[in-house]
Image (cartoon, rainbow, N blue to C red):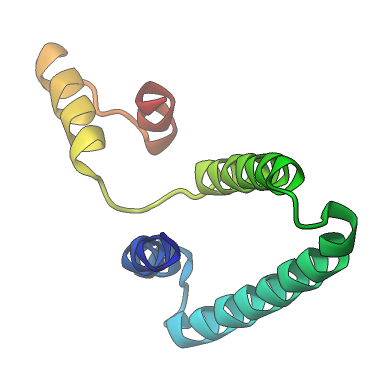
Amino acid sequence: GKNISWLAASATRASVHVSFAQRSNLSDLTGKAGSQGVLCSLLGTTLGVSLSPLLGTSPYTIIPALAVFSAVHLFCMHKALQSVALNTLNTQALDIVTARYIASGGREVLSREAVGKEEE
């Protein structure tokens, strides 16, 4: 499971970094993002080691804790990705833009913000 998550994150990370890059600073941005990832991983490991004596070894305490931490992680990732404005169109966004353009007779092209709201 963890390897699949890492692979999916790696596949999308490049496009997110390119959307943030300005003045050809993609390498700086990628390096800083890697450093943040290492720091967050270290903090998560520290939190896990700190909580493990409190949770014990019972599946009745470990499984609910896993569910709570997984839900918090997914929520935080969702909120973080909502704030990223990519300069490219995915298939769903392209469909929305094209449909609105055709429906308006070529008079209306949606902004990125409007497309983002319709994607939700």
